Amino acid sequence: QVQLQESGGGSVQPGGSLRLSCAASETINSRTVIGWFRQATDKAREGLAAIDTSRGPIAYSDSVHGRVTISLDALKKTVYLQMDSLNSEDTAKYYCAAADLSAVWGPFLLLPDKYTTWGQGTQVTVSS
Image 1 (tube, rainbow, N blue to C red):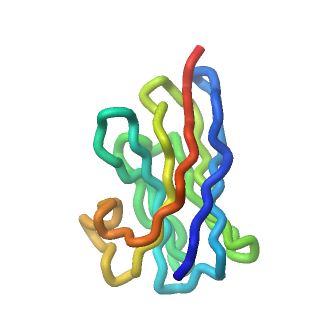
Image 2: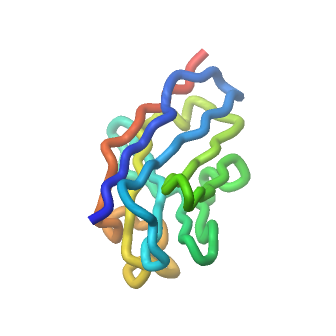
Image 3: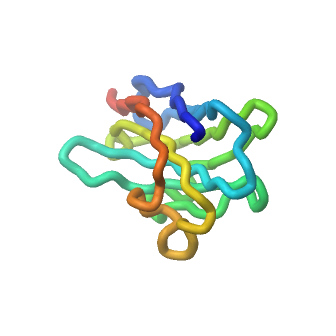
C-alpha cells in the first residue's frame, strides 16, 4: 500500500504563495487518484483538488479554483499543490490522500471518505 508524505507548509503573508509536495513511497499507478485536502480548526476536512496519472487534474474545489494548481511528477513520484493569492481563510493543515479510481468519480472526486490512504499533513498559516 502506497505511503504518502506531505511537505512544503509554513507561514506566509496574505497574498503570498506556497507549493506543497506529496511524496509517494512507490510509483503512482494508473488506478490511483491523489487528492489534496485541508482541515482548519473546528471545521470539516475539505477536498481541494485531485489528479490521476492518465488524465492529469480531474477536479478542483470551487473554493480554491483559480488559485491552486495540482500537478504530478511521475518520475519523482510526487504530487504538487501550487497555491497562490493566499489569505487567512487558507490557514489549515493540508493533507494528500490516495484513492482507487473506481471509488472516486463524479460527485465523489473530492469526498474525503472515499480516500483510503492519508499522509500526516503539513501546516499552512497565512498571517501578516
